Length: 123
Image (cartoon, rainbow, N blue to C red; front, top):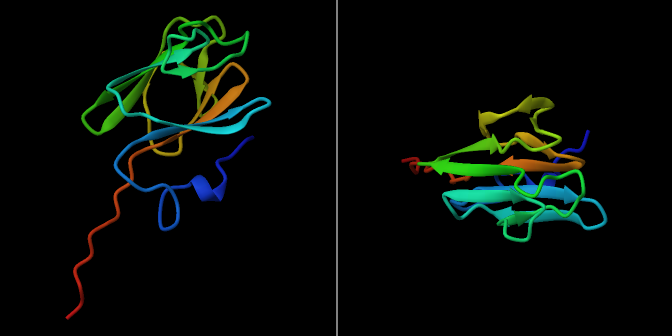
């Protein structure tokens, strides 16, 4: 099973900021990181999608990511080969930081927004 390399993990030395990201492991390309800066992010093989996955087993309009407040959900758009989150086929699911998503043979990891915790200085 493919896992997100440590340098992409959120936390002390990882991805920081207030924007969620999708990190894809694309055949022949390697890791590709996409910021999720819109309320609606279309994913699929067609060039009109915000995230294009150029693989014949990925549908032209495969799935959509929807942002509601600070959370994201994924909806499969009746794709031919389905979408898996953490190994399970889904039609609609809320995403959590670190979820693995599979679009055909392409694996991705959802990296939710990370904000450094605020610490009160010690007296």
